[in-house]
Image (cartoon, rainbow, N blue to C red; front, side, top):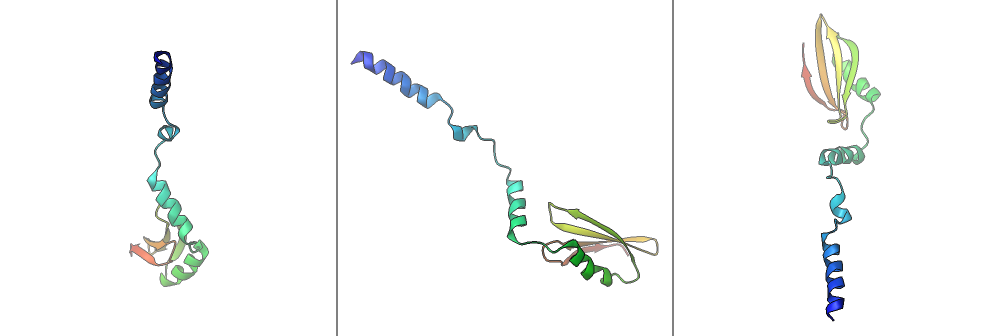
Length: 103
């Protein structure tokens, strides 16, 4: 019986001490998970549709173009009027104007 106990004890200790595959995984990046969820929730409005809605609201200004921030899904449309730059932030999911800065 003593001869059998030693190998069984060693096998049990080896099983307990070996790293489990679940512990070897790198930690998840929850920021990327939330961004992926936002992307998959609802398709956003195209930039052409956003331009069609917003450009007429900025009367007398020259449209310069847009920037896109994928982390927040916000389009920043840029305009020029009388030497001043106007920035209009638009929610890419709803098409609503979030913020407007400049004259």
